[in-house]
Image (cartoon, rainbow, N blue to C red; front, side, top):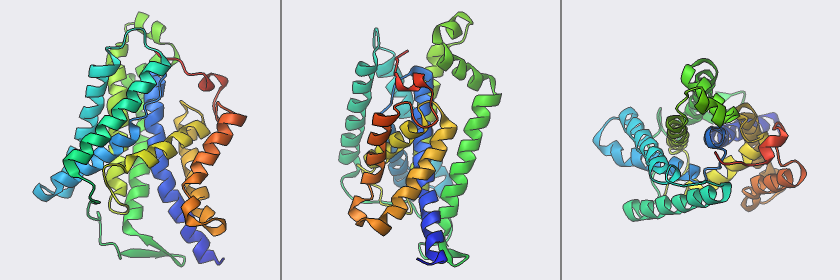
Length: 296
C-alpha cells in the first residue's frame, strides 16, 4: 500500500468519523441534561437532510439547510413537550422505549412523505468530480465542508457549554438536577433546549453528508448506531472523548476494507461497541458513573 492510498484512507476515515462524532455529541447533550439515551438521534439527522432536500427547489441552498435544521429542531422540541415531560416517575427503561418508538414513528412518517427514493443535496462547492490533490490523495470539495462544518460546530458547542450562562446551567443540571432546581435553574426549559440542540446538530450533520451519500427515509438508523457506539466508546457524557472515539471508529472502518470484505465494514462499530460494553462499560475516557444510567 503506497503513501497516497494510505492518506486517501485517512482522509476518508476522518470524514466519516467526524459525522459519527457529531452524532455522538448529540447523544451526550441529551444524556447530560436528562440521563437518558435518545435513540431517535439518527432520525433527526435524516429528517434535517430530507427536509432541506424538499425545500431546495424553492430557495437558495443555505436557506434550505437552515430550514431543514429548523424542522429537526422543532421535532426535538415537540418530542420533549409531548412525551418526555408527560412521563410521571420517569425511568431509564420507559424513556428509552419512548425514544425508540419515536424513531420508528419518524422513519415511517418519512417513508410516507418522501417514499423510498434516494435523494441528495447538491454539492456545496463544485461537483462530484471536483477534487483537490493533497500529497497525491484526491479529496472531494464536499469533504472539506464536512470537516470544516463539523469542526466549527464542535468548537461552538464547546464554547457554549463552557463560557455561556445557559451552557453552565445545563452542566449544573447534569451534575445535580435537584441542586440546580434549588438554585433557581429552570431545568425543564434546559431539558427542552438539550433536545433542540441535539436534533439541530444531527440535522446539520445530515445536510453536510447528503451530497456525498444516499439520503432516504431509513438512512439515519445506521448512523445512529455508529454515533451511539462512539458515545459509549468515549464515555457517555464526555463530548471531547466522543469526538476522538468517532474519529477512531471512522478510521477503523475505512482501513477494515484492506483486511475484510467491504460488506463487513459496518460490523466494525458494532463489534467495538460490544467489546467496550463487556470490558469497560463506562467507556475508555468515562467515569464509573457513566456506566450507570439514571433518569432525571
